[in-house]
Amino acid sequence: MPRRTLPFALLAAGSLILALGGPASAQPAADRVDVVQIDGVLDQHVAGYLRDVMARAGEEGSALVAIQLDTGGGLNVDPEELVAPIRDSDVPVLTFVGDSGARALGAGVFVAQASDHLMLSPVTQMGAAAPADLRDGPPDAAARSEAAALLRDLAAEQDRDADFAAATADGEVAVLLAAGATEADVDPAAVAGSSARYLTSEQALDAGIADAVVPDLFAAIDAAGFRASQDALRFNNLGLPAEILSTVASPGLAYLLLMAGVLSLAFEAFQPGFGVAGVSGVLLLGLGLYGLAVLPISWVGLALLAAGTLLLAADLSIAGLGIPTAAGAAATLAGSLLLFPGPDPLRLPVWVAVIVSLFSVVFFVFIMTWVLRAQGSAVPATAENLVGRPGVVRSVLNPEGHVFVDGTLWRARLRDGGGKVRTGTPIRVTGLDQDATLEVELLPETSHAGT
Image (cartoon, helix red, strand yellow):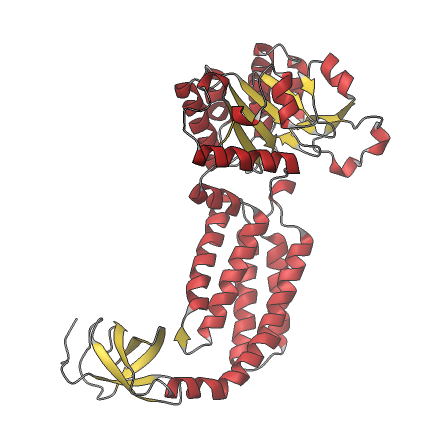
């Protein structure tokens, strides 16, 4: 989730209230600062969002576009296309890598170097520009050379250290230290890249790596010579659909959505009707599959994950809970760990894989076993209450199909067993067989109809 300080949140809320309650012309465009917050992978949705904000700011004559950046790299983005709107903008662009702990890696370095103003917060990192796209893996010499040339040009245009910018294409990272800290105070495992330059705020400024070192975005805007008052800021939003799709394109969330969808559908498969769990499962599974389509995945991992889930479900269906369950648990865990083979920002945390895999076993071995035992008596009682109730055919009865009765989808069989009954035909429930399939008949005024 994006990191925001309390003052930042209050200021954003105040700006929103003013935007909704006050006239649109209350703040002159010449004093306006368009704020863009990028926290996470730079994908196509974020790139398009940034391009739209730049275009809008230019059309309306805003004074500044301020980007608060914290990213581990890009995903399916071309660095040149990413920085083109920034380089071509008539409105000055400020990139602030912050707050404390933020990083500008991969494609984020290109955004930072292309900006007119580059500000860093203490305890931040910037570098490891290649690969710019996290899907590409370790770059070859030609790719590194191309990235270095572009970064050198971007830094030179802004009078920054072009040599450092080019070196980031070979994995160099600038690590900005906290006040009074030294290299010995930094955990090497937390540093990205193949080599690191540990710098104090003064050293970063003297080296031309940053234009200023400031604690927050508002200080960055002030340091660039622009107003940071509440009235001057306009916070831009990615938009709900794009925000959802962009958020889904992260290993942890894509994996959780995928598994939640699979387990919801498994739960629904063992029920006589089709209700909320089934609909939710389809939606969750769809979002999870979208995330898998965007992210680099291992097909072996996906196959193991699918096989593990099927083994768990199959053993439950025959009430075995033996060797297939053990094999399913092992395959589920192995598939979860192998599913995302990309670099660190695109890897699934081991603890997430372990916890979800254990929950999957608990779900099939304990939760679903209890549900099926309870269902033995509860389902007939519930279904028998439907006898005499009217409904409507949802899939063709020939003679079996599905009907919708009292807000629930049920498998049903036509009582007389003859002919086809098309969807939309009114029916009435007459009974229930041992397989929890409803027996139905046509209402008196209805006749059979082919489809």
